[in-house]
Length: 322
Image (cartoon, rainbow, N blue to C red; front, side, top):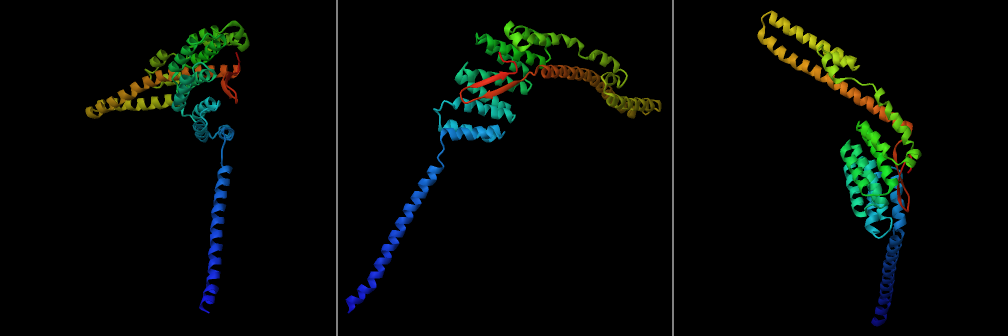
């Protein structure tokens, strides 16, 4: 009787334990399957990683693009597209105006690859970075060094062409003319450089203001500003200096020497500033007109450097390809 009762009680208990055990095993197997499935779903290969980085780059999300290209290089270091990823990291920095970071990146590529396609285009981009920060001497020196490192006529002509525009932007028209003239005759014809050199002869027609004349005219307060077409500044300078001069005269006339002395010192500062401002205005006027001349030339000749990149190589093209 007691044994029968124990058997009756223990049977459901064993069944419950067996069921619980099967349930737990099933859950563990399901979790393992889900984990394996999730891992398989999120597995990224080189093509997908590169495609996503390119997508970010093309949509101008440059910081994300740079980060994704770095991931590509880290996870797929032996992929042949690593050099393109490195180059696009530099271009991402460049487009986001982090010119120093871009400069360091392109310098690294040039050091690692030498005068390969990637190295050559990086050399041009190094000069572009210097150009953007208005460091024209370094931009020019970099290209001169590149020219000395190669015997390729087409590449040398491209260097001369870019040097010509750098010299123009820096205001050195004689060196610009010399650079354009140094391009080989066939490439001069292809790039219309001869026509460009003829246009440079119009440099003499650029409106200019003589800084010495501006300084002399500034003897009369505001005269230098007026000469440079800054009429409002001329009026303000004339009024301020006139009031101070009159104040100095009245102070000494009424024997208020202390006040007169203070006003004289103040007026001396304003008067000197008036002369300096007149001379500076002439220099600024000349610089603006030179820049306008260069910009008009760029528009007329559609001169720019455009970066073209494909999956096989890196191409740097100018409007006139050599």
